[in-house]
Amino acid sequence: MAETLTTRNSALSTADLRRSPAAHLAERFAEAEVTGPYGVSLREVPFLTMVGLRVAPGSEAAHRVEARLGTPLPARVGEVGIGTGCSVLWLSPDEFLVVSAANPTEFTARLVQALGSEPGSAVDLSANRTTFELAGRAARDLLEKGCPLDLHPRAFAVGAAYATQLGPVPIILWKTGPETYEIYPRASFADYLGRWLLDAMAEFRALELL
Image (tube, rainbow, N blue to C red; front, side, top):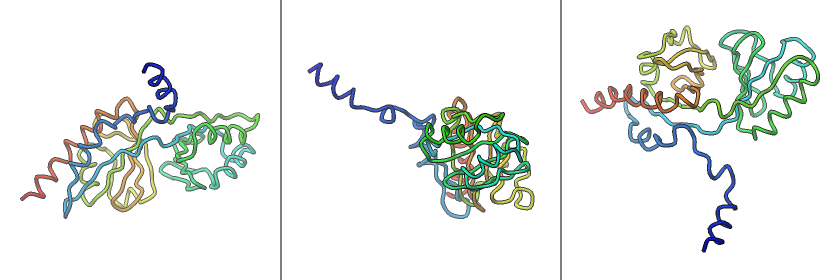
């Protein structure tokens, strides 16, 4: 019997065993969804590949990286470059967060190769953050409960991404559609922020029942 269990466990891969930072809240996220005029939904998008990229814009290394990513590097705060199977978020003049669904080890290695021997770095940060997707008519109203940014469409356009805070939690906030946002908190804050968002959604559930 012990041999059978050992054989079974050895067949499990790391991917089979890993759990996302907010996996334990998945059912509560689904139950909290609100429909109608106050509609809002929340889900975790687990295990996205995230690579911290440092490279001097305009350098030969940057040109090679851009060719590999399939997009120019964003040039100013708020900009996001949409590449081949990836997105590149501006963090500072020479710092970017590359988000993809590709294999993290292989994806990072390709960027390291593109940098060559020139100054710069590409570091796999996939385990450092998770992703929450917030969507619905009330998504902006919910975010305004705890985000200091001006979230009006005239100031925060679709496609823009900014480093900011939600409540006390540092995040990157990306507006991916007119009523859709991706929120990138550090993994250690995922439980707190997930519960904060659930609490903020409760108001809209109450309004739905009126």
